[in-house]
Image (cartoon, rainbow, N blue to C red; front, side):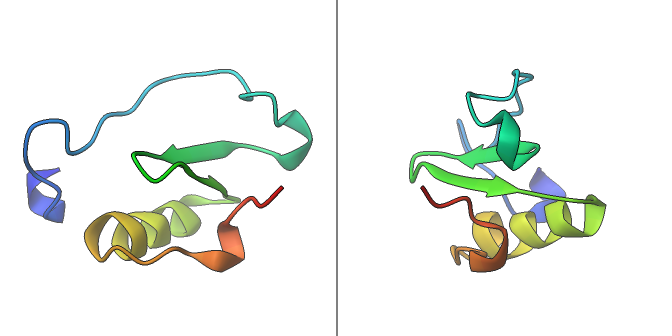
Amino acid sequence: TKELGIVGRGAARANTAGCLDRCSKGPAIVIYPEGVWYTYKDKSDIDEIISEHLQNGRVVERLRIVE
């Protein structure tokens, strides 16, 4: 995470989980403390979430799961 500029205690952590009660929406990533839910199709989507949200604080609306 240091090379990505995501540093500090509790800055980033990955957990394995089931479908988080959203199986019909595909795989999910949740960013806390904001509680923003994302779906993704491939590595480039994950890279975009890391770059935009985690590094620059911008929500990636096209990948956001909205109820």
